[in-house]
Image 1 (spheres, rainbow, N blue to C red):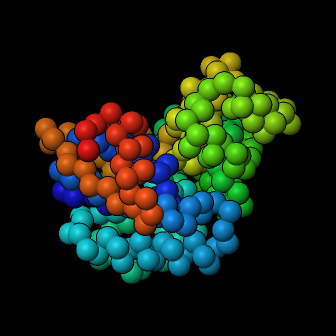
Image 2 (image 1 turned 90 degrees about the horizontal axis):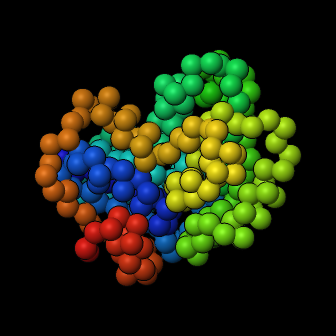
Length: 250
């Protein structure tokens, strides 16, 4: 099987990492719209337009299914992508919510959702969790985490200051943190440390792996997964980051 992974930039490589490590697919084709990143600060109609254009890009490849790694696109453009795609398209929000339902049995536990402004404004995580009966949900837009991660600052004073700034008004320690942006798994350990190692961390990559395994009864069957990387701008930079994050030769 061949899977396409779409993201607004380089952050979706954290999802590729999970897919790659589980060896569920023979080939992964990644496209990052690096010329127009970030999506998280753009309006709904712009995000939808870019999302549909991404579907057209993947029509150049015979992919069996597509994963939308970008939470902002999953929030606003997933339905439109599914309508124009010639293969199944899945977003990370549904997978993330499903992961919460498996890890948190107590519906009164405290859930913190962090993501871009677009993802948080969509209320997709909040509404989906409410439908499942979860009562205590805080949603915080944490856009500064994105450039911090892209600068390679996975710890240290700058990240610590950003966490103190964003989380200062939380009245209760979260029992689970949904990392609602593909950049955030790279600072997951620091966020968990900030909250005294208490919360369960919900990672889009791991969530979508479990979602696809269950949906298609996938199992680890490929000894080697081929990787192809494409970007709308500066593909060499994307490949250099992929080499570093995935620890593979490209």
